[in-house]
Each structure stands twice: as structure tokens, then as C-alpha cells.
Length: 173
Ligand SMILES: O=P(O)(O)OP(=O)(O)OP(=O)(O)OC[C@H]1O[C@@H](n2cnc3c(O)ncnc32)[C@H](O)[C@@H]1O
Ligand SMILES: [Mg+2]
Image (cartoon, rainbow, N blue to C red):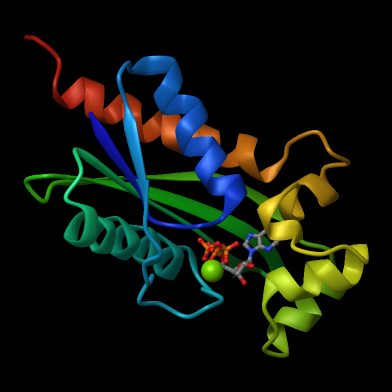
């Protein structure tokens, strides 16, 4: 089976490979850099979902794999509180798209204020943590859950939902 991953981000890539490897054998991976065709910093659950779906479809177009994954992070505000929101999608060879949402967690007000001013979460987190490329390791979720859940584990849950829905749709009835 060929599995295509529509990102070069390590945290997302590990999530896809960890879950796929525990449910399938003889898997080959191909990694492609694709556009999400939404803002660099999606600002609603709907836009984040669309980013994940666009990435999955763009990955399918480039790689034509059996499973083509797109994972997207964004934020949304509910009653002046800003949540990091996460979505995933898998496109099948025939163009079918399965999507699922994952964890949403509250961002501290000082981070939210930076994003409202037009900055992106990735660079804002690097300044906040004084580390580089947090988006490829623990992620904002790792930082703001005291390390209890890192970005890979968060996306693993989404990939599991996607694979589970795929298996359900293809079950023997
Ligand atoms: O290479 P890609 O696949 O684009 O991975 P990314 O880390 O940029 O992730 P997204 O495009 O899905 O996320 C949209 C924006 O939100 C940022 N972001 C999302 N989740 C984050 C997290 O957990 N930690 C740090 N930045 C995050 C990210 O850096 C982008 O600015
Ligand atoms: Mg990005």
C-alpha cells in the first residue's frame, strides 16, 4: 500500500506513520509539500477543516497514493477565547474524502493577542518558548499542557479517526 503525506512537518509525519504502521503491513510512504489553499494561519474551524481537505486532495493529485493525508492546524474564537483547533482528511484514489476533527485547547490571552494582531502561531510559539521550530516537535499543545500531550499524539488521534472511518466504510458486510 502506498501512503502519501501532504506535509514535511515532522510532528505530523510521525503521527501518520505511527498509526498506519500499527494497522497495516507492507506500507511505502511518499512525502509531498502541498498547499492548503487557505490562510497561513486559519482563523476558524471551517477554514482549518478546508485546509486539511485541500491538502489531502492536492496530495492525491501529486502522489496518487492509496491513502493521501492532509493535516491542518488553526485557531478559532468562541466568546473571546481563542482555541487551537485541528483537522485531518484522507483522500482515496477515487476522490472520496474522509475528514475528522481533533483536539481543541485554549491558548493563553497573551498568545491570542499576538494572533489577533496578525501573527502566526508557529513564530509566536518560538518567541514564547525561546526555542526553534516548536511546531515540528511538542507544538503549542505540548507547551500549554505541561508536556502531557505533544503535537504528534494530538494528530495521532485524528489519523486514528480517519483510518477507523476508512476501515468502517470498507468493512465486509
Ligand atoms: O508544514 P506544515 O504542514 O504547514 O505544518 P505547520 O506546522 O505550518 O502547521 P499548519 O500549517 O497546519 O498550522 C497553521 C499555523 O499554525 C501554526 N501552528 C499550528 N499548530 C501549532 C502548534 O501546535 N505549535 C506551533 N504552531 C502551530 C503553524 O506554525 C502555522 O503558522
Ligand atoms: Mg503551515
